[in-house]
Length: 80
Picture 1 (spheres, rainbow, N blue to C red):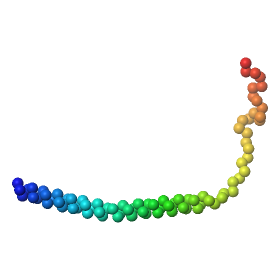
Picture 2 (picture 1 turned 60 degrees about the horizontal axis):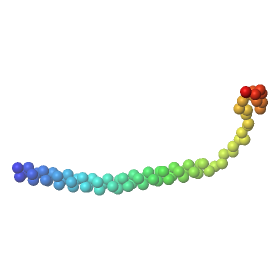
Picture 3 (picture 1 turned 45 degrees about the vertical axis):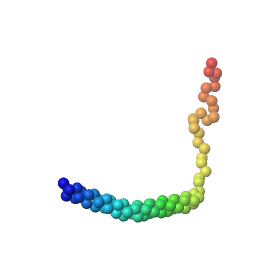
Picture 4 (picture 1 turned 90 degrees about the vertical axis):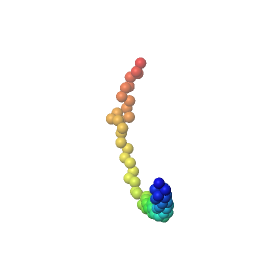
């Protein structure tokens, strides 16, 4: 029974050390990924602003009638 306990404690120690080393390795990768993502976002916004600042000549709009009444009131008689 004592051998089993010692073996389990050794396995637990190995597991704990492996878990701590894995979290240490994951930190710089995550930081690098966030850095690359931030650079891409900033570059995308910069390109969007640069392309957006070019003025586009807008054509003047042509007024069109919304109805076919031509400014006349269709009901020229009182409602009541």
